Image (cartoon, rainbow, N blue to C red; front, side, top):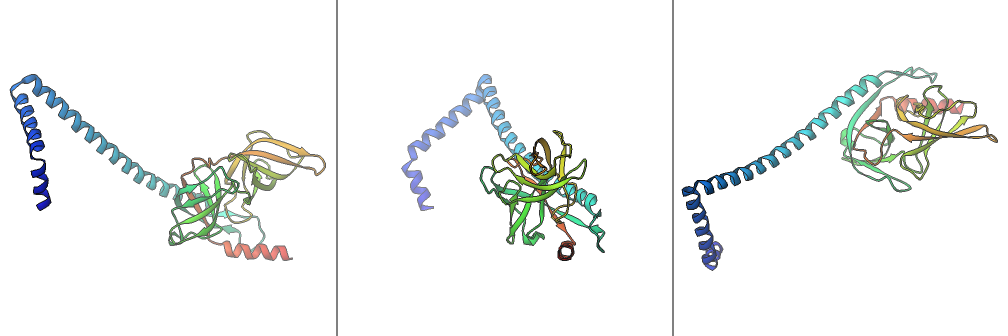
Length: 270
């Protein structure tokens, strides 16, 4: 209070001037119809501007909430589609069940040799290492490490990212990897030369590793190059996921992953 009184005393003439100015405008506006209308117009303009800002903020908050709701709905739909997927591995497991958890990318890169993504989901949400991650348009990456509230993802555009995938139209399968240069381009190797490849052909997950359900879109063929000495061709394709703009993702939970891994190991040992 003492400081306030001191401030008023030190600025008494300035405050008096401002008071008289405001009073003068009020008197002028009250007794002059033109000035009164101008003041009212100015008041409406200011009030409208404030209201517009408030409305925009409300709409933004509403969109955030709506986006979260849509993510939840999409997650449920994905679970319904992937809930019971028949597998070809001969074992007592003839059905693999998958669940999805929606999340958001809060940090990522796309122009490094080993790119990364950080999600706003962690152990508390049921996220674990070696779970697949999908974007709204296709495969995005694999969870590598998890904290209580966050998860680190190895995206497909990483030098060590390898994924079992196939051509959707004929089931020829091979290994998909990044070309190491362009965040939009991947390579599918080990496809025999006699397999007919055309631009636009769809490349999907094979589902052999258990990270992803089968037939999740990886990308679309751009071109292919045959190697006569090896008998195999290398296919260049464009990723379905845009790693420069990725925001919303879905983390894949294979509820029977441990059992599947043990069966695969047994098959390899035989």
